[in-house]
Image 1 (tube, rainbow, N blue to C red):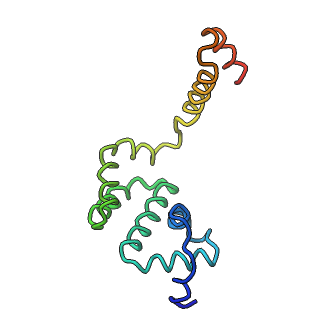
Image 2: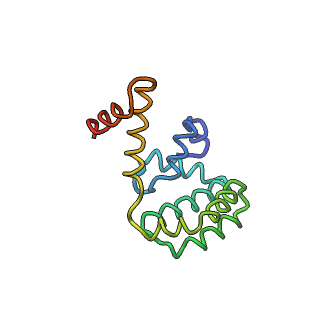
Image 3: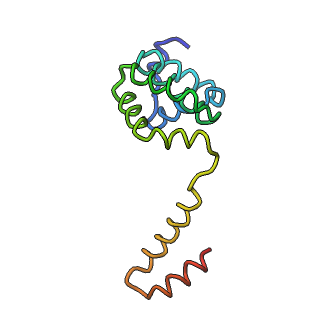
Length: 140
């Protein structure tokens, strides 16, 4: 497919393009791969793509030792959004290291809290704490 043919095709929504750049390259269809190749012709987008792929690979493979070099690469990239992202991750450096090193999360706890808040909001102004307690226990 020539470059002029690619530019005449619609690229899709920004959300769709973002997911194309974040997914594993081997999971993309041929059309999606050609779209990613077209997008990567822009230097900053190519840098962003490479750093995003490295980041997700670090997360999937729990490579905490690569975090420091990745953060430095983001800071040196010259892309303001990546630099800001790296700065904010550095503020939470110990939490990031923990996320790479440990396989457990507080997701199940957050799910229970979300369920409780939903039940509480659904009965706002009606009933007592005892009714809320009974509804939550029945939902579980």
